Picture (cartoon, one colour):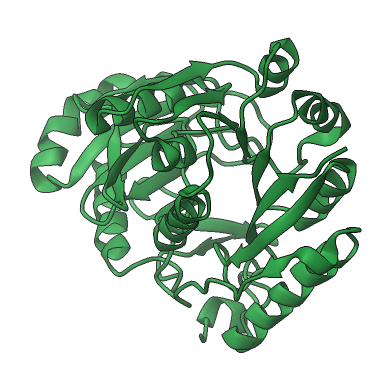
Length: 376
């Protein structure tokens, strides 16, 4: 994949873009192999071939700094104190071009002054855009609530011009810091959630809830988790750090009692709607995963964990050892922290592992491991 931004030195986010994709994938697989080879039970690991992504047009979301002026807004990044328009980035599907055009028009119409970092003047800091392939969720990150009325005034007219815009909100980030968003969110559209359909399951996202950036690879990840665990004789399943419920919903069945734990209340609200539509009886709760595990007197037979980049940590790994689930499904976006956790889980052996390339042209990837508890 050739990128004009990279060639011109304007954007270095995809640092591996000069490397042919098959070589990128081989390097990531080799890194995962090295991480797993440190485990005492490495000889028993079935390391499957990596799941590849499309090389271009795979991102379902864009996070754009807004610079320039009301009449000529620039959506992209700031590099060496220069505003770079990134709307032609090859990571976005073609339909993003029209969406960006609509957003520029709306900035002009509602007179949303881009925020200037040096002078600390202006209001609009970022636009955050998410697509499900047919509809859109758009968030304006503003310095204050001063333009809420203007955005509300024009939103109905704007949605007539862009009917695919399903959800629109304003996030307030008042601090002069490199923070993407604040805590306050005002949903201005009548619809509050965007639906992604993966493997026959509706997964919802709303402002401030997380969803994977690569829909096709995410679908493969969830389906693999379903396939690997389909024949396990387990009745109690926990999904810690469950997000909007991707793993829990894919692992649910009438024979299983599934519990999903996630600290984000908006994400749990999305998961509950998905479960209701699926007819799945899943106990989703907005709680801290560590606190929930430590308070439990009895563990599940299958534990699913999808922790943030920092991993599970020593404390949660120790609690997992005490809860003694027969099987553990570990999904990680950071093989380094995953390796440390797997070394801490000394009573478990990795049976299967596979890499899912969510982030082509970077060093990042997702890994999925199925572990089994061994006899003491």
